Length: 121
Image (cartoon, rainbow, N blue to C red):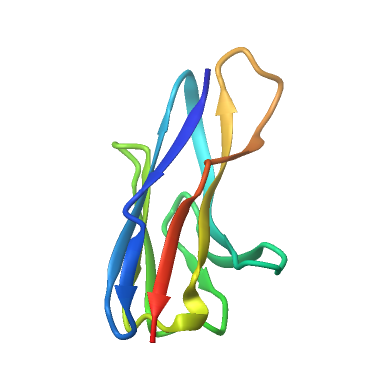
């Protein structure tokens, strides 16, 4: 069984910071790209940031300069440091990882269950 478990969400005021974590576990042979998405109430899920296996990163324009994605390959964990949070950052944040599982036929995308971030003004 393969799992992605997020943590670090919470309720805070505008201007604050949070560090989200997502740990992968199970029969994982390799992890390719990892990413954070978010879904605000009544809106579609959107891509926030991605990081490749060699550390290359990309960000949505709305979070550039405020959020930083990083990963620890030894721990099979991806992080999202969120700074200068705004009320419009309020959403459920989901981790996504493209992984190759032992005895499987190829890389597949897996999702975590989400962690809620609420930013008050």
